[in-house]
Length: 144
Image (cartoon, rainbow, N blue to C red; front, top):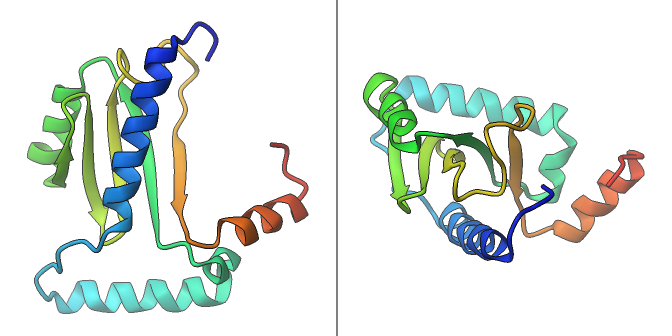
């Protein structure tokens, strides 16, 4: 991230606040789908027994991907894959993959990362239990 201007940091902060605000709000209820309901129940049951993060109240995840052509990438996700576009901030698009799972496509010219960097994804977990989650991660001997 060397060479980033303060303007990019300010843009990134605004984007993160907007995305987190949107991710923390309740999404519109999707139409009832018995198969999706069963999948959701099965996933919740599995998470309750296998995912220690659940006890820290994580309610959503956001994966960030950086593109040279964010419009083309968004068209692929929406038109080809049929993923719902739920927010459009011009240089950043928010697509809902599941009830609380979002793919965030970012214009690499405006974002914090470039497409020249090693390929990466940023995972953002949304929780009101940030301090407890941080303590849990520290107990895992993670490098911060």
